[in-house]
Length: 136
Image: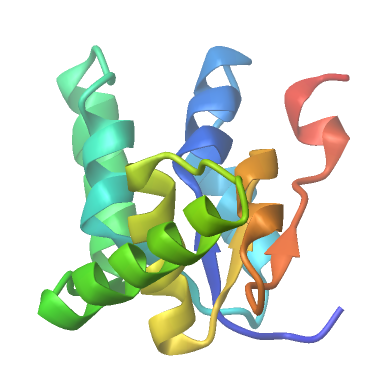
């Protein structure tokens, strides 16, 4: 696999945390030479469910050193355009996923996710997380 920017989707963090795995360490080790990216939607979806302040602080600090993609008006427009195009084809993708996809596409990043919705988005590179991360 080529070394490129990768936006880690919310479900990867959430699934790792549910499996009682150290999401920060796993993602840091996996990243290697890749630049990890995050957007506001991912921060919101992940951090809102964290119960301990210690974990919240650790995850937030990890996200702070990633490439943070701002959600400017053009990202919202790109997400809206994606939604309109997909809807015309009969494909429904949740709004948060469209914002994440538009943010990743803005910087040319792949999305690391187990969410099948992202595979409907033309031009978006999607990477599946290794199964062993979740104890399967």
